[in-house]
Image 1 (cartoon, rainbow, N blue to C red):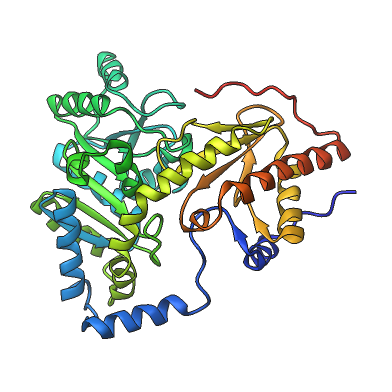
Image 2 (spheres, rainbow, N blue to C red):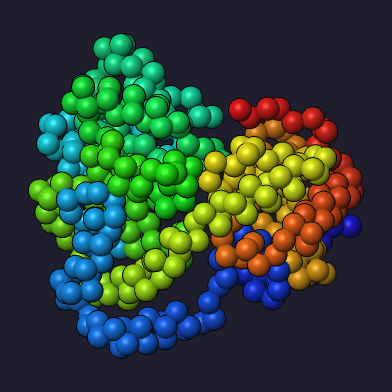
Length: 391
C-alpha cells in the first residue's frame, strides 16, 4: 500500500535532511544570509538606504545599467512589480490599454492577472504555446486589423516551455516589426543571466539592445534574498520610481535585498557557463533512461524539463522514498505532463549539481522512475510507454 502524501512542511523537512540536492543552489542555514549581509556591509562601509536613496543602491543600479547597456535602472522589491510598472508606463504613453505576451507568460499564469485587476490592461496572447513568440505571430495579429498592443512582453528564456529561446535572427525580426509599428518591446529577463550563454559571444548589452525596457531578477540564478531591477531610458526609469512608490515598493530600507544581490553578483555571473555545460551533460545522461524525455534536448540554457512515463502521484511518492532512503532530493515540483498518465518536472542546474557528477545522480533518476512504476502498478495508474512529442 502506498504511503499517504507528505504535506508541504514535511517535504521541506525531508529535503533539508538530504545530503545530495539536484535542483538549484544550496539553502542557507536560518539567519546565515542575514549575518553574511551584515558582515559584507561592514567590511565595505555600506550604509542603509533611506526610501531607496543611498550609495549602495545607486552604485548597484548604475552597474547593472552599464552591464545591460541601458541608460538607467531602478531596484524593485519584486519582478511582478517591475513588469506591471513597465507595461503601465508604455501603455499610458501610447494611450492604449492593450498589451501582448506569450500564453505561458508569468503575468498570465502566476500573478492572478494583476495587469488587469490593478492597471486595467487588456491582453492579447500571442503565438503558439509550445514555442517562443516570433515576428510572424505579431504580423498575423496585426493583419487581422486587431488593435496593436502598446507593448509586447517577451520572456528570455521562456520557462514554462523548458527554457526555450528564439534564434537571434528571430529576435531581431520581432524587434524590427514591433518598432516599425510603434510597439514597445519589453523583456521579461527573469533568467537573462542564464540566457546569455546561448547567444555567446554576444554581451548582455547586445542581447538587451533590441528591447526598450528590461526586467532582471536577483533571487533566481543569482541566489539573493529577493529583488529585481527595471532598466530603460532615463525618463522611463524616473517615471518607474514614481510607480514604485505608488505600488508600495519604496520601502524605508531596501539595502538588505540590494546587498544580498550585490555581494554575490559577480561570482554568480561567472558561473553561468559552468551551469550550462553541466546542464548539457546531465540532460545527456538522463536521456539514456527509457521512459524519460528531456525537453528541449539539448537544453538551450541551464534549465529544462524532464517528462516521466509515470503519473505525478506515483513519481512524488518515489521521490520522497529516495529522499528518505538515499538522502537525495531529485526534484521539487512534480506535475502532470503533456501526455495523459505522464508527469513533468523542471530541472534548474545551479551550484548543487556542480558538486555531483552523472555517476551519482543519473542512477538515482533511473531508480526514481522504477519506483514510480512500482507505486503506479500498485494503484493501476501506470502510464502508456509512448509519449507524444512536445516540439
